Image (cartoon, rainbow, N blue to C red; front, side, top):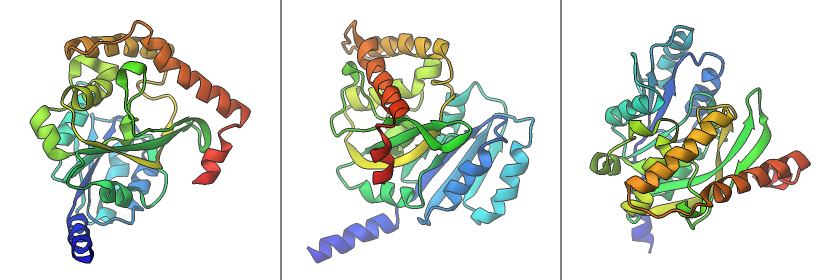
Length: 275
């Protein structure tokens, strides 16, 4: 009905989104990340930057952009125990209805991402997730691999949401906690496994490309971290009493290899042209 639609629109109007960026010596890419937040056409954004005590010009860049956010950008700079410790600090600082993360070398794909995130939430949704592009670290327009989401989430068969697209109601973090620091490179996986498979929060798939994620981050930067990540993923399943196949690494890594081959052959061009 029209009345119900008006109520829903008012709910959206007053929904604040907290976007958290963790930084440490991020001067090479941070401007692009901040600009992609600044350019969003949704007004009720709280932007939090959690810096680990950078020694390059990261803080100068943050201070340069601070006035442009007109009081909506807040930051701290202090030593931490790593990226997930910094993310937990961001969650504790957040005051928005919805909380998500934008890495310091990633960027939103267009100006409507925040608006579409907020619009996807309704009274039956605790978290949303979407699609992303893995791109060259030196050229964000060069797609290396795609991460296409699905309404059906099956962690034990190697598929889970792309964490940079995972936006969660703040009260979910308050109730079930943030990142478990004992999982280092895979704490994002453990968090989503816990919330989705163990706690069964209500999720919604937003079928749109949201993020350009540069290759070479904490979990994609080298083979050692990929192998360590798979070991920690088994650990996460065990911690929460969830069964997992011995073939899990195949389920998890084979689709990634196929996507890489497709991108090499130019078979994913239709995906980028479609958006």
